[in-house]
Length: 329
Image 1: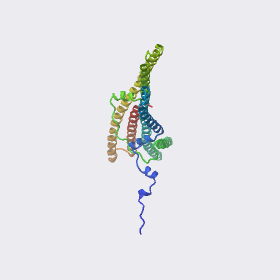
Image 2: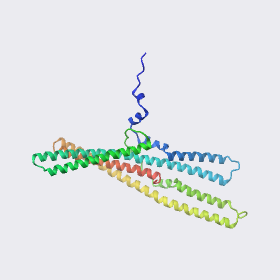
Image 3: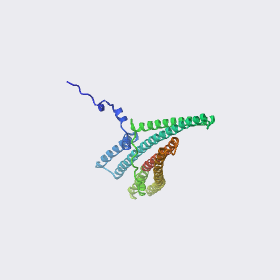
Image 4: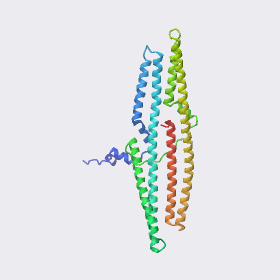
């Protein structure tokens, strides 16, 4: 009887499998539900909803008890939603930083290659009498700087990967960012403001204060008590208006930042298209013997710089988008 030969997939541990697959942004964002603040917010939401059902089933239910239970449930809901988007914002920031760091490593490596070639050329020129020892020393210094920059870029990538790993767990490579979400309509800002927990809490204070006024009647409450309740309601209303005004300005600023990020992304994408065309032309010139190999390396360096600018602009847009959704926190 022949023993079954284990497949390669069966031999792989879960960690190996995780490292063998490219992590997508969608999969990374799904990890938001596992973040501690989200777990805590979900527990509060579940408890608040359960409490609301208990209160509503009470045959001796009073209006204040019902309002307070409903308010707790509503606040727990928006707090949970904000916790999720805040966790997603952190993941997006870490994810985009890794992608940017990867391009920075490529850029540093290309610069290192050019510096090494530059040293070779300086040495050749010194030997044939068209260069000096000073030229060689300067080329050597540029090579040393390029090595240091490449080392810093590698360290930066390792740090960015560690940061993302702390949020989503083990991963191998990263998939490129998908097409960015469209710029929301301007009216979305007001909707986001209305769902902000701070705004909702301020509005709930107004509702409770107004309820206290409604529940007081001159037949059993002193005029002074009623006046004090009305004063508290007015103060709550004024406080709510101030909260909405301040946060409204903040959301407007976040929306403007997102608009600016979109414009910058469009500019950098156009620049990358031009750089790609320029690189193709330089390759033709290299093949035709019209430029040197080192000149073509410089063209490749310029193209990677354009790639980095697009990657950074795309990352900025994603970060600005999730910053708007989370209210900038």
